Image (cartoon, rainbow, N blue to C red):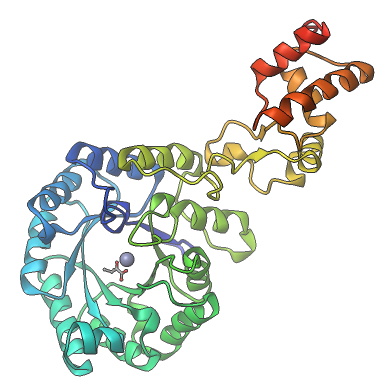
Length: 388
Ligand code: KIV
Ligand code: ZN
């Protein structure tokens, strides 16, 4: 794989599905996994096999269903977790065990009630055990975002020596600023002597709305895998959104970083996840929100009608949206009205447009949005017939 290729690790079915109310049944999980394969993700984190018999069965079924992507199962740094994950992954063509432990002071002192030395010992033992089942072992340093860099480097060096092929640096609480997270990755690149033997992964949560920015700063500073979910679903404020990081990299060729994602499937994939999880996508969500390619103010509409890229940096077709939408509201101008009227068969002269515009504003002040049916009624009222 080229040095510039970013591995997309999708955790919609694990970190995403952890969200209350987002639970998927077995058929839905398999359907999502098959679509993720078509989308071109490199790794599917299919679940946390020890967490429930249902999750175990789903991971096993996904291993049988998909061919190309690596299938990953989560475990804690606990012997039984790792054994159960290995068992669930036994049918995978490319299995990966994802194991790890908290490394921040908060996790070590309050959650694990142990010592930094013991954390390193448990991490190393977990990786060694996982390695006895599969070649591909990813280690996560939970709460790495709030972990002291010097200690984090020690942990990462030890787990790579024990056989970890991927080292995940989660900003579990979404605390870091992009510059801090980028600097953390850079620190590891520069201070872990065996870092070249493993791939560094980002795993950013969105508590401060910085998950996408942090992941991008991570890859700019040397990470080569991004962990993310469709629509950014996940614990609390969610995970890094797959569609956002993929499109950031695509829209910024100067970064010289690419993914294997077929971006034309992003919109349908987002809808599948939203419908299956009964989790609506906010209309103003970047890339996949209903308004991501809708223009409603007169100034913007005039620009977009003259040339799409005056107000759109992404061609909607590139992400599987048929076209940009010109939405008619009381803030719309004559250009938008003429454009929408022409689309439904009325090519208006300047004088006709003046008349229609007056009527249109009356309707628009009463309604949130003026739709095609309203335009036909206006035309009837002012006695203009279809002429295109
Ligand atoms: O956010 C996190 O730290 C995680 C780990 C289990 C990878 O989800
Ligand atoms: Zn997470």
